[in-house]
Length: 130
Image (cartoon, rainbow, N blue to C red):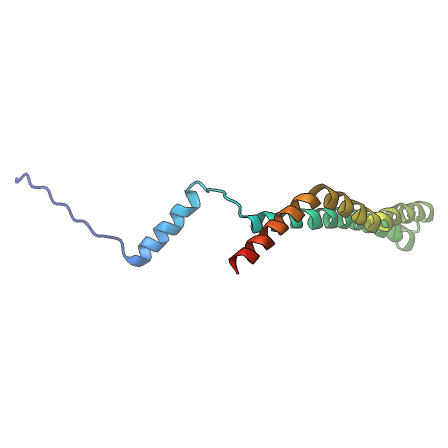
């Protein structure tokens, strides 16, 4: 027997390198540096989306309760509880839009100064580069 060592090396192809790199990026720690425009967009979406979510949840819950009451009246002939549920379900649907306006104003007040400051900084940067 011969004491010989054989080693064969093959470099990954370009396609394999791309696949390896894409897998590696999924597990690499993410460096989170947020630009001013990204922060402005994020704050704007917080203000708008929060009020929309609150009003949608109220509207959907109210609609489901109202629908249950309507079903009780039309299908099951349970008039008293059906009417009570219809009235109870209409309350969240009615207040959904005022809640939307209230939450929107609250978040505009909370984040408005920072949004205005960021937008002014971004606009001044654009003017200086021109």
